[in-house]
Image (cartoon, rainbow, N blue to C red):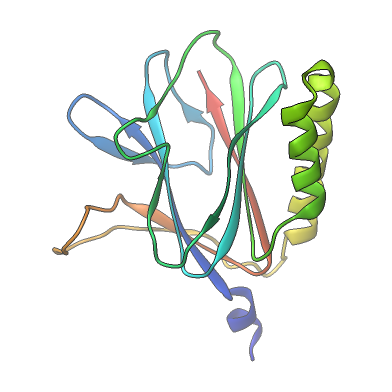
Length: 184
């Protein structure tokens, strides 16, 4: 097996979608995404393998919350939240983050920290920081110097079934972590 084959063990299709009154547009999430109060957005994800997915939202006050903790089935497109109900940006203005963590198996330490975050509201700041620290550790651990860069893919032609958005293909090995920065 060559290094390139090893690095591309798993593929993930991902898009950050911003909605207007008439359509949706896929935005470049590799740079800070600029949004305004009232803007609606949604995430699109599809994996080619069974995948554990964690989405953690961190607001401008550095308080973390769990957006989603789920298992993805291979080849099944997922819109988060559901296809007909996008997230809406609300005040106060600030710089928020969404951490997306995908793994080929459950991440026990992260699972425990997310449980603490959800169940212990009295220590939300400490638990938020512990979750973010673990995500950063996972990002460093999962980083590959030879990682294949994620690439935008435009979909052309016709197909049956629901219309899929323009997305990026992300190649990953065991763990992939990315940060989506939202400026609003």
